[in-house]
Amino acid sequence: MQPDISEDRPETWETRRERFIVGGLCLFAAIHVFIFCAAFPFFTNVDEAAQLGTLLKFAHGEVPRSFDAFSGETVRCQALYSSPFYLGGATYRSGANVQPWRLPPAQRDEWIAANASRYGGTNYQNSQPPIYYAVVSTAWKAGGAMGVDDGRRLYWMRFVNVPFVVVAVWLGWWAARLVFPASSFHRLAVPALLAFMPQSAFYSLESDTFSPVFFGLAFVLLLRLSAAETPSVWLGAAAGLALAGAFLVKMTNVPPLMVAAGFFLSWVWRLWRTGELGRWFTTVAALGLCALVPAATWSIWCKQTFGDFTGTRIKAEFWTWAPKPLADWWPHPIFTLPGAKKFLALFLSEFWQGEFTWHVQPMALRLPSWIYEITTVALLAVVLVALLRRPALLTELQRRALWFGFFAFTSCAAFLAYVSISYNFNHCPIPNPEFPYLTIGRQALGALIPFMLVFVTGLNTVMFRATPRTKFLVLGIILAAMLGAEIVTDRRAFGDPYNWFYL
Image (cartoon, rainbow, N blue to C red):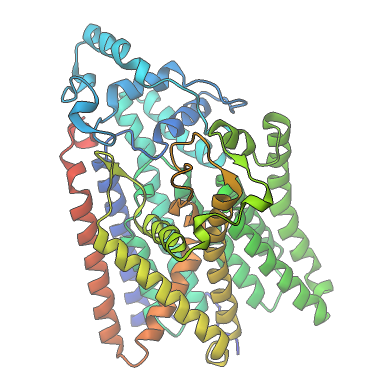
């Protein structure tokens, strides 16, 4: 039995109330992300300066073609607006309590000249796909046209994250409504967890912020196609463009995109087996062309410009990563129980909370990290057992969606594990020979919406005997704990004299 996927359900008091709640969650997500974007000073320890360097190139109409040095404009912004507290506090830089942008022009120029040597170097982000930089750089250009100072223009670019997180919340509701139309817990818990998620990548200049929207949209559209009874060329084209968009936002979306490709091929196989492929051929072709042509165009450009189809080889060489012979993979500590636990714990903690540091210490409390890690593993295991042992309790579309979400998320972890064991990290700061684990959780954000659908299904399964009121009470406690832990963790940033509130 297929669930009703019609968008023309009759409007009732309950559906109006649900839309009102989801609208409230979208508003909360906007306020949540805006406040934390404003609270964190520039430049975070997570590649934010390099992101700015690439953004400014796009703002000036230039697509980077090499790993060149940071521009004078980038260095000037770093010298004026960098908080010292990510990397060491007052001892990190002389005069650390000075707000350089407030100095008279002559003294400001002296300050920039005295501190510029700290901020040079090569921009290793220049080979990244273009969508994020093309979109966010418009905020810098708009600020300049309006006469806004550079400090506020930096935050304007960060604030572009706000509408994208709001769209991700709405997409989470759409996905849950499509797959679990009879479960109000799914329909509200998925967008609620997305709105409250304390992922610090949402508060920084990071292309990972766009990944949930593009891949989440592709996820929903592919599910709609797989359950539709009549072909739709426009729906196929939209799904293909969403897949291409996920590719052109971040190369680390390739693992979940491979899962999406497998889902697409299995759907085509079902059409062929049932004799329906001919009727659906135009829709299938539209999806394939809209996905492959933009992705192939960028890949060819990368090959001609950076020497490989993804533009990642030059970045690996910059960080002194070198491929290992296959025989050298197996001694890696990830194949031991302590090593596997360390990798998984760090990956899951960073997936939920991010990677910011303050005075060189991670901005993540141990207890919340431990809870995120344990609950994620446990609830994914619950859903996996349900899919394997009790598939009849789920509709066909629900099984497809949950398998899709499970493999999309685990493929990200598997890819990071693969890179960890297949490279020597030589002189890279982290990972390095003493800590040979690539655990960048934000690189799994493309799979965020499918993951949340699986996570909430596990939570709902665990509470299968509870009443709806009890389930929502538990959800409320979880959300309050998430927000409370984030406030306690990040409260130090709010008083930093370099953030948006002090400009």
